[in-house]
Length: 281
Image 1 (spheres, one colour):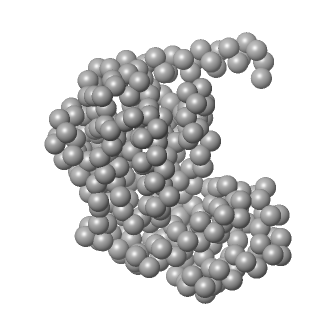
Image 2 (cartoon, rainbow, N blue to C red):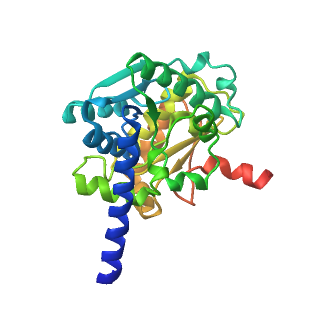
Image 3 (tube, rainbow, N blue to C red):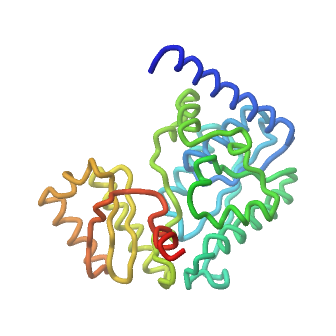
């Protein structure tokens, strides 16, 4: 990059961080909806640097989130000495969730955010904040509607931060999450209308963990009935096609309960389950 452009980019990023800090300072005390992902980790630590003990992390523990994500969230809070409150959530008690309608994300997000709001009030925190950034506006995300309806703040979006900004600032701060792969809840792996069950969630979790254990960095295992549609980065197709690795993945996924195992030739992308909505829209 040209040095002048680089300087301009750095200055712009500094401006966004300064705006973010002022915005957080005005809130006074906050509960951060903390999943342990790139965005919420930056939001939590950056807010903590501004408000100190007037910041708490509230983490939802549920079967739609892999246990590794929960453990990483706990480890992050311990590392930086940030108080964390963990809330148990039974997603199958949410009416309509298991039928996986197009509004599933809204139903789930609203239920969980209401729980976080309740916890924030109990902990005497003035506001609840969450980690959406500007890039999240580009896909079908009904969960954002729940965030707006409940009056939850989105400081990263307010500061005009993109995912790249969050990663760059996280790297500057030395956060272990700066290059963490993007993650979405396991319920997002199911084609709309597909019944979601605890067993299928566990199958999907095990399948994605297997791929990560083989060295694949950014993965999704999409569920279409008894078929698993694997998404990995195109540059990792060659690794997946190595006979030993391919056979191991196929055999394990069949063992987990899938009948067919396929590779999506478009490769990994966010929101691929929403592509049918665009086609039908």
